Length: 388
Image (tube, rainbow, N blue to C red; front, side, top):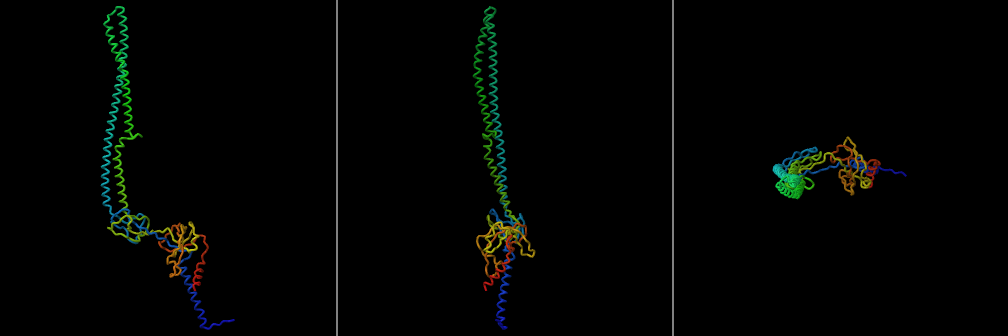
């Protein structure tokens, strides 16, 4: 059987075919232009963060303008510090006064301590002197008593032989009696002085124990403690005020780009109020957009290879850190058809290479050791054919 087509019939057959090819070619072009060459497309994530004061204050000056690139530690803005510095001067003067008070009190206490110790020592010395005197008196009277007894015995022998009178013996008897009474009185006195010496020495040791910083405590430290507390309070206040002075100067936490300035000189801002917004100068994370059915196999730690879409086609490495649990609409720039939304999952990728990426830059992502995905274009064509 043969089919012959007239001129007009051939045109009726060729035109639909031409239109279909055109549509398919356009779809492939759109798919390749949106999705890029790889398993997925990605965006160098833009991290924008605000710069805010930590204390209530008036903004005195801005050191940057919108669009300016800043380095880590660079001064961004300055708040007024005149009142804080006055408070610091007052606090420092008060600290000097309290410290002087503490030193004077310490000297006074030291003098009192020395005087008290000297009094205790003098009492100990006096008791020891009395005890030594008593012991010497006892020894002297005892020796004299022995001598009187010997002499009295000699006088009695002479009287019996009639060689001397009894007058001398009578005097010696009186002296012996007096010495015996004195000798009997010394031991109780010596014992009393010995007890007193022990008591005074014990009080001195106890006093030293209390006043020399031993584990039992220190009376001096106890008396100085209130002033020492005041000194520490003033020192802490000064440190706090100095921290407020440092916080009044806002600096860049990292290399960044000033995206927006939200305050003006003279504004009074509370803690947390934004002064400006900064965009991280060097993105370290990429958000990849993956087809809904494929994202579930991308476990954390999966290695990726990415390429820039710039002419240089620089390549970089990274690894998956997390996959979004929900399906969301892809950015419009990655839709296959600009008028039909595309859907997928967000996959978060941490860069392991040192490479400069521009914030928001589109990237092509390929999963390490994943099979080639040349069927993507076939799938796009099939989608278009199915819609015909």
